[in-house]
Length: 102
Image (cartoon, rainbow, N blue to C red; front, top):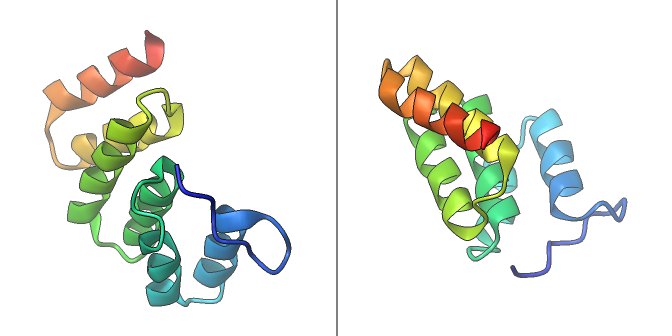
């Protein structure tokens, strides 16, 4: 993984993205994530930004990218399960839950 972008509070990428999302600066939050394309954390957070923006069709794709980089990310598996559930794809929902429980 690439090193996270440092936030003003020293909390790294997650802290920076949280502050920007809370301020309604979704495009800036997405840009922070885009700066680390080989980071599972960045892809997870990018999916979170898409979710906040109600761009649900992009959330699952970002979670899958995060999981390609780090298949142990339980939070990404849970988010993916939620996305596939919303889309009515229950086979993929159960598969994601199986990964969480494995």
